Image 1 (cartoon, rainbow, N blue to C red):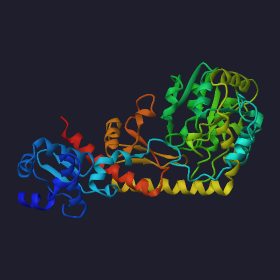
Image 2 (image 1 turned 180 degrees about the vertical axis):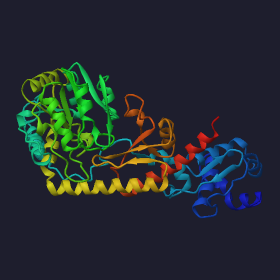
Image 3 (image 1 turned 135 degrees about the horizontal axis):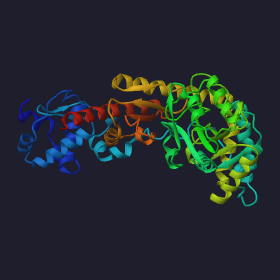
Image 4 (image 1 turned 135 degrees about the vertical axis):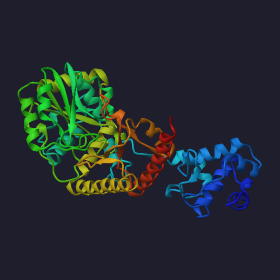
Length: 455
């Protein structure tokens, strides 16, 4: 293709397009890719030659190519030139609109929470308000919510519970913060969920395997006064489920009083491959359980809870009262309604939908990025993926430029062992996950090119 073809076919009428010159040129290239005029692998003109042919500065063409490379449409190959990668389906629509509004169309896979509220049953807001009385400042939480949490744990998590065992918190984050300060040190898994890094510096780390934390390691690190945080069902970020025999061993550590075992049930409702074994708290009354509405219902509720007994609960209640006085009463009332509305059939349908999304995203990534090693989660909302790089931090920045926000392994790792991983939420709709996989593939191609070109 000679220079005249490029100016007369690809860039014909480019000056009439909206926006700065480099965006006008970029939109012309995008349209040519979209309608098949420019096929995958086509080499674009050198910057100086195209600038001379179009009567613009070389800097304008450089900015155009940079923008298209960032969007995953062009790729530079050192010593060979710049080539068309193709136009991912997520760029459908006007080219100028894509380039001007690409950040507004970003997909967030970094948050392992429900993508929206469309899965929730309807609530009666008037009834929620009517159920509130007094000042709404009970540190233990609204009686209606404590009763709803107790019913939910009893019915759906194999954990018989009474309302007076429940302390309502501002999400599981506050619950863990309070519990971490009841002991002399915190032991947790590595990797762990990103928010735990702000709870406190760990006194010990439990490496996770295919079955979660090793109960022998739990026993070895247990010390009087130590708080051991575990996620036996739906470990975040790996999605593992601890086997029944291992749970019995951990429960024995709690029974012996060797440490305070805290069982995080935040993702326990979202088991995707069959019913899990009973929770640790059902095996030992010494185990303290933590839960949240964020993963099952909606993160914006910011409602969590602690299930404990006797002196432990009294100590936590006093700490809660001095820290935040009480959790917002209105969101407690809404959460109580929702928990009582999600019966067995609703949960089964929700889990089935999530399992489908998990398998869909895993398949899309495997097809486009065969070098990535995907851990198939048995529970939870995210994939834990190992990339063929020492650190995924730089790739996370590249992915963001391509319209996908991801959580690099460094956010989940407390000792540097998992920096080559990423956590990807599959909570979104199937078409959104397909688009995300396409963008990640384009981002990986750009990242690989950058790595190859680096000295």
